[in-house]
Amino acid sequence: MQRAFRRQMLIAIAACAAAVFCIAEARTPESHGKLSVKLDKRFTVALPAVGVTWSPDSKTLGVSSNSGMTMSTFDRLGHRLTTYTQNGSESYSPHLVGFLNGVSQTLAPLENNPPQDAAVDIRDVATGQKVKTITRTPDNDYYPNTTGVVAVSPDQTRLATGGSGRFFVIYHSTDGKNWTGLQARRTEKVYIVTSLCFFPDGKLIAVGMNDGQFSVVDSITGKALKEFKAYDEPGIDDDIGGIAVNPQGTLLLTGLNSIAMQPPIVTREALAWEKNRPAVIVWRVSDGEKIAELPDKGENLRDAVWDPKDRFVAFADSDGLVLWQPQVAGKPFVRFPMSELALGLAISPDGESLAVTGENDVTVYTILNN
Image 1 (cartoon, rainbow, N blue to C red):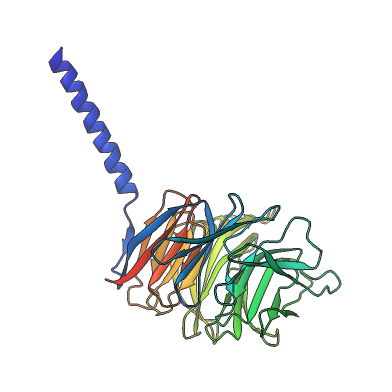
Image 2 (cartoon, one colour):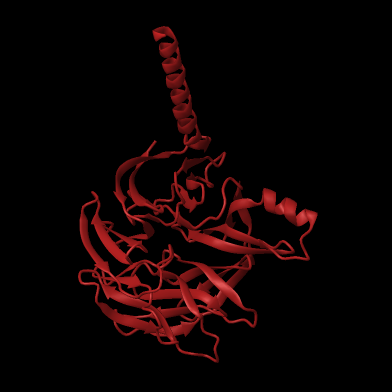
């Protein structure tokens, strides 16, 4: 009896060990080549996080959450500094987050039933009180119906907002209070601005849309300087879910968020393209030449950011966090699986810290040379 019981226990232990091994094996980072950097986890905060951003001095982390509609700030070691709660507000998105006026103010979603010309709120970080609602100038109903993405220029003097509608708007301010709007792109076709990213000089801005197109726009004049088609397959609508620019402003990365098949144009060729599509592509800004592409290893890219020190690009998708070096021979990459969806992503301006949000937490890593 004892021998049979012992045998059953050994079988159970072996099965558990095998299960643990399979789980560990499944979560092992997938890599191709060797990166010149590595990540060392600094801390994790249990928080249903959505968006994440760093302050200009790289000392403060801002994290938005739709659980209780909170905005929290942390220092570089994970100590909570402030938290405020919004009552009766629309939801945060991974692309609706950012500091203004140093770290004293932050972007926030609009309150429920906002004025039709409202774009985004600005709130005091310490108190959560609304400082200002930035409004659009109506133009024959061509302004966006909702604001889904927002970008802040490096010097915090310009905001870019976009969403559903026929154009996105850039706002200028020299004092952080008096924001004036500028229509940046207009077309008769209804489209959605899905991603925005300022160039390092703060003058130009990259705009990604749900038709697979991206543009480079002068944020001073609103003029579209260059327009490219990143993805153009008949019968497929392609959302550019992430867009990032290298520190020199010479290369630009685009990544797909979702694909919608449009019947009755769905063809065998379209289905084959969808199956083998590149997840991310790097383009040369000057002429739109494709420089590198990463085969589809995941789905629904939600955010992308280029390392300020130009060592790698990082993006978050439904399978986890990816670091990629498209400018290095062999184009090495590493994918870090996550137990939940990766939503938001940010690298500190000094290039020393990387933060990624999931459905239940936010994790901060120290970026080290490998």
